[in-house]
Length: 418
Image (tube, rainbow, N blue to C red; front, side, top):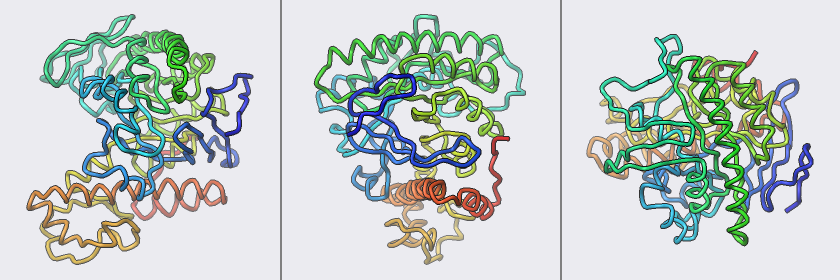
């Protein structure tokens, strides 16, 4: 593996690097290759989410066959169950889950805050709603309390109390052993006030600095293990000055890459990603957290994002909703009872090559476990293949044509950056 010297003169950790293979003319989008101890990631790349060290309902080998290059697991959930020490004893995340490729863990910050205030998986919301410093979902009790040192929270599993700090998050993620991990950050909602967003950006920066210190110490203490890259997470909600300030602050730290996190308005996605990427070093990868819709993917890539993760393909699949070039539809609907055609005639996944809508309809109505497996295979393959096509279009100069074709078929419009 070739050593890449960065623009700031810093050499990345052994076994990790990023090179740009092609660019979108006049824009921040690019295709690249990320190198990790467990293999390469050709970007842009979609990262399927395996929250608890598994992509629900699908074998790791099947995920490889459908084209997934990397999977993301969650430090918060693995800390609570089975415990980071168990994952470490099992050989680290990839070995523990039987995955033979690169892995990522997020810091736990999103889950601590989203579960702690009752919003579960959704923090995207309307910024015009009445704002407050102390935000809590309707009918929920606060389970997480933030201070400048860290977060005290109550487990959603058994009600036990726990404490996450930057140092704890780094310890947990080092034990889990993913190739890429994220600095502990405070994830806010669009319901928080501007004043609170300012405080949160400052807190996230201070926590990132502490994560760097802890990461460097743990890397030395755990010498001989594969290097784990550390990504800082940019916050700042929908405010341009806060997003740019957060990005500049993290860019000044010795990070291996960057995440773009926090709540944002969908129609502002491309613009916010552009603000951030204009401030970040271009020789390091950028991961957009929690994005997986086709129109969002085009907007994010055009504005400079390299990788992104989302639970939507697998979660939608388990509920019977499958992706199609012109629409998405729910297989439990009675109209599919006698449709003896694939979900998508043009799809090359195992599900579409073998089974009909009628059979999948039967599995869902009969509550057979195979229903979730087959639908998830299709949905994950659909998004992975789309992002692979996006990469190819950057390299051969047909990005705009591909975007117009894909979004035109579905009647969607991409929220591109100006």
